[in-house]
Length: 130
Image (tube, rainbow, N blue to C red; front, side):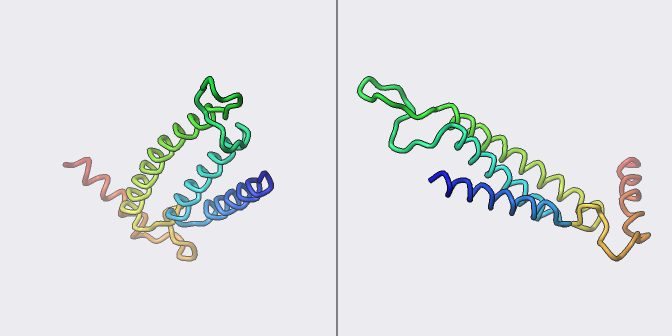
């Protein structure tokens, strides 16, 4: 079971790093989400893998599962949803401002176009004027 979990962790982490190194914002968001899942699996693994043991203390049971990793992962899931929502909103704002979903704001190979460089500043001036 440990070999399977370690392999899954390695595969998910490798996919996350590959996606985060891509140039598109959607790939980066997916990579960050996958990395969050890999970290959650790692936290579970750090709390020892047990099956069939309750995390709640009971007089009838002699051995227990550690409830701390479960609580940490539940908290990390909630924080991960919030961070993913924030990153998606930030990516949408950058796409609207730069008219590109590339992480640098420019399409590779096109160079610096005068339209894409001037449009965000023109929008910014319009926002300041109103």
